[in-house]
Structures are given as structure tokens and as C-alpha cells.
Length: 407
View 1: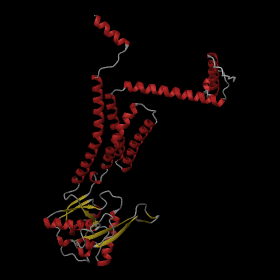
View 2: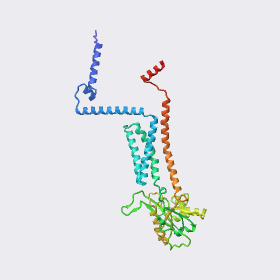
View 3: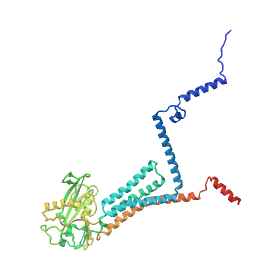
View 4: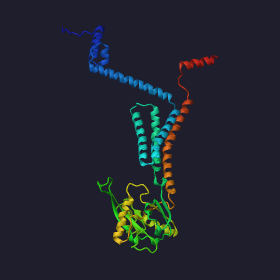
């Protein structure tokens, strides 16, 4: 017959021994941190020991910082956060406004704005690094909301129409202008007729940017091209051999080289060729339309550089005046006024100041609205938290409540 051998079934003891052997092998091959090896008495090199100490210090610092933030967050209520946001808003306004108010100069406005923006940047940097508390975060939010209106307020305070030394010449006659009329900020002309504007002697200059510089050949800036038109404003009995007493200057806001005569005569297609022409036409026709509506109207003009701009319009307009002299042989004087029509036909400069204040008020309100929303949200959160029922009580509070019930 055939003999069959069967493998012996492992007993419970053999299975337990195999399990213990596998566990010992797994533990021996597993990674043991340096701190655990040091606790077991295993040798730890200097680098591992340093890493252990640095890791322990970092964990301890993180743990303590987390506890501190939790404590401060618990102590800092919604009402306090609203106060801190308002405080940050006020600090940002003072930081941007105070330097310009102290020196009444552009450098003060730039310095104050830079300080306010620097405070916002540092607060945001600390908050991103999670090394700050909610105190700094709330102050930073209020500070950020105040930068824009404070900067506009600081710069608008330096506007020429808000300055105390604005020189104006009212009810002036073109045939009786003083010798220093070119230095005035605003001039109001009376007894002017349509025939006093000599468009047939109008000078034209095709200007380009960046402008030339004696030392560096060209000034820094973007490339652009535009047209300046200079119209002589004269008086009855004037001839081209007499010095032009007043120049009315228009430009097309760097919308390319265009013809001043074509723009004045409306000799272009309004549908396709309006760019560059329309601005010149509106400017050149503005005093004529005002005199057609009211022949006895008083025309108000502003110095070309009175309104802040990046380019020196007064210097550029001199080229248009020289072109008129070279082409039509009119007598010129570089010291006579070269001005543009005021956007508000009233004595300088209350209307300009009102428009500036209106813009500043609008921007300030738009900036204050987010602050009001955040403050009201904090106050609403505080009210809801005070009305909400607590989910748990401390042992002392429960014992105190129990003793009050017994009594």
C-alpha cells in the first residue's frame, strides 16, 4: 500500500513564538527618532542631538504661542475688535495727513502715505507669518481702510486752488493788461468780442514726449504725440505789428498730431476722425460759443500750469506761439499770458475746490463703509454671543447654582 505523510499542524505555542519573532524584527527595522533612542540609551550623534533640541524648542515655542493667541482671542471681545479697527483707521489718517499738513509740501504727502502703506505692509506680514495677535490684525484692517482717503486728503490739500497765495486778475482788459500779467494764476477778461479771437493767426505745434533735455537729451517718460494751438486774443484796432497781449492755448491731450485749422472749422468726419480733433474743436470753440450765448460775458482763464499735470504745458505752448510768429509775422512777447479756459466760468477758485472736495468726500465715504460694516459685524457678534445659551459650565458655577437653589 501507499504511505502518505501530513505536515504537522503548528500548535498555539509555535504560532505565538512566530508572532513575537516577527514583531521583534519589525521593531528592529523601524525608524526610531533620536529622542526615543536617547531615552533607550542608544548613542546619538551631535547633529541628531542638536536637531532634537531645536525641534523641542520650536515645538515648545509653537505650543506657547498658540496658547497665548488662544488666551488673547478669548479675552478680546467683539467690541474691543471694533474699537481697534477704528483706532487703526484714525492712526492711518493721521500718519498720511500730518506730514503734509506740517510742511504744506508734496514731500510731506509722499512721506505720510509711505508711512501708512509701510504700516499696512508690516501688519499684513506679521499676520501672514502667524506671529501676531488679533490686536495687530484688527489695527491693520483699520489702517488699510484709511490709506486711500487719507492720501487723497493730503494731496488735495496741496491743490493750487486751495492755496492761500492764488493770484487773480479780475475784470481785465486785453488792451490794458499789466506787465506782469503772465505770472497770474487766473485772469478774467471783460469787453471781449468774437472778433478779438484771431483764428487766422493761430499757431500750431506738433509736440512729442518724452521732451528734450539739455543734459540727458531726453526726459524719462512714455512716448506720446499731441498738438498745441495758440490763438491770439486782441482788442479793437489791433494789427499784427502790435504785440499780442494774450494767448488762448488748447491741446488735444496727446491724441496725435492734428490740424488746428481743420479742428476749428469742423472739417473732419465725426464718425471716424473724431479722435484728436474733437478735443481741439471743443476747446477752440468754447469761448466763441460762450460769447454767442452772451456777448457781454466775462471769460475766466487759468494759467496753463495752474492745474497739476505731468507735462509743462506752459513751456510747450511757447512753441505754438513761435510758429504763429514765424508763419504770420505777428509780434510776440514771451512774458504775456498764455492761458486756457477755466472749466467753471466763475471767479477762481471756489468751484474747483468744491469739485475737489466732492471727489474726496465720495472716496472717503466709500472707504468708511467697509469699516462701518466690520464694526457693526463685531458688535452684532458680541450681541449674539451674549444672548446665546452656554453649552457647558464649570464645576464652580454648577456648585454655586446648586447652593443658590437650596437657599
